[in-house]
Length: 301
Image 1 (cartoon, rainbow, N blue to C red):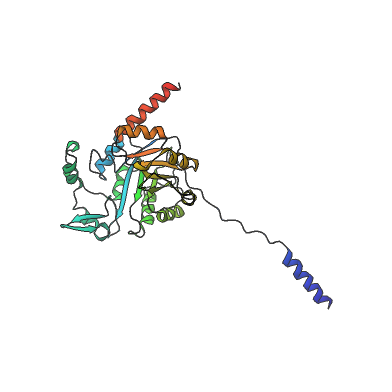
Image 2: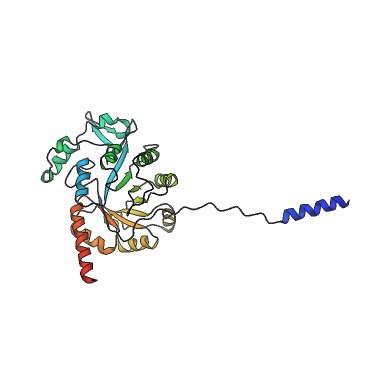
């Protein structure tokens, strides 16, 4: 009987002894971007002066002073990541999804020809010879002498695009570097896709894209979610307003409006406090930024 009582007491003591608490899973914060820099992002390169998403347009953007070249990515049927805005192209006199054609077929397109037709005053010599390029060729050509702002277009349509993008960036030694500003930024309209990238490689700053029909605004729930993985937001310029910018900044989110080509609008946005712009005209944006810097030096010597 004494043994039974002793056993009950031991069981009671063991049951009441506080168990060591399990460590909480580590929460990795998003990688930030410099707050004080006004970034000039060459939208598809310097696409006001050369056919967008061609090496010529990217090279021109760099020469014009762009901090980043923006690259839209689609994936072909044979798994090539190509720099292309459109998810549907005209081939063999028919509309076809990029996901349904090979890279060799994509090469039949002539972006220079279309550009010349629509931008006659900006035509470059030999622009008809320009071709759509794949990401690997862009990264090989420019290496680490430029910064890349990459958008994953329609990731739902391209299973595995996140892994393939990260593989190529790693292969070209563009990840986990110590540079004055991040070598690579990734953006998308797909929160799911960005979260997948964040889980695989949290060192890359991410930008959540939005397109608003009215004034830009995020609910408390949306803000709480986006701050878990993103360093900032990309917003259509028509929807940008001071209240939205101030709110994003209060949540440590940067604001990069798209696409801004008017010089007066650039100046207004800088005054509102945006952290950078997407533009087809990097040369104009650089002039605006330099003018503002000169003014500030004069005011605060």
